[in-house]
Image 1 (cartoon, rainbow, N blue to C red):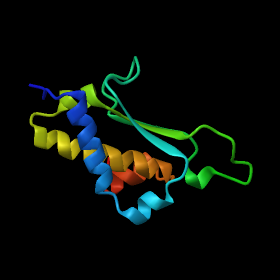
Image 2: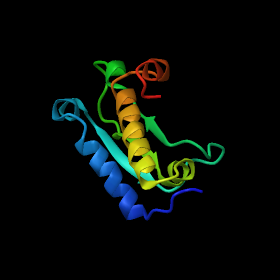
Image 3: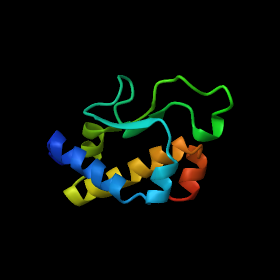
Image 4: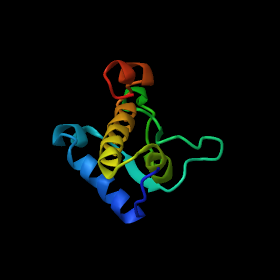
Length: 117
């Protein structure tokens, strides 16, 4: 049975997951915003998170004047795959790290190799 959790509590968990990311790493992030949405896009009902933008490794001399990159963490798909609040805490932490890694140019294959898939 999926976990029930308010949007406010879920946002707190995302914030707590960000607090666990080393300051040195957060300091290297540039022009990125982290958002929480209730549902993933149509056609992708089980998507837990997504990174949209230009990874730091892809930014060249012509990068500028663009809207911030977006990391979006999806509440309802996450809650659907979890059985307990502890499961949600763990899944949110994994998803936050996974999407931040994309900001640094790390692809899904490498993330799975590292255990962050």
